[in-house]
Image (tube, rainbow, N blue to C red):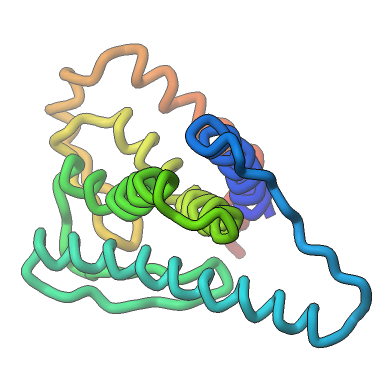
Length: 201
């Protein structure tokens, strides 16, 4: 529930911020929310016209993850779908932190930059769809963004497995600044409170 709430908040914030950025580059842009008069074919067409581009953008997002992972490991990852979403995993591979950050953040960075570059050229009638798709991509990247932030607070010499396991060499923790350790501890404490592990037995 907490993860869903974070994703919705990031989606809403990114939508509003991207709208403001579009207005700077395209002053003629007017946000035009769809008007549905009744439950009819109009609603069906609207849902279909939103769902298909969303599926496409999220598929491209995961493909970028998979491609960067393939470049770094030499092996195509497998796709895992669950109620938490779709993810790509390469079990038994432990990846250095900086490479893992690249793998995690590549989709949100590439697609957001592409969206920004398209703003001056895209027809006005498609700007709202562009804003929506970029926002969906950023909102769907909340796990990538939050986990990357947390990993950045660790030593660059840690290794991460794509399922989330972290291998930490304690002897190299000396090179982590104290401010990073304090923030990391605060994050761990917050997570433990809002999303505690189930009790065994």
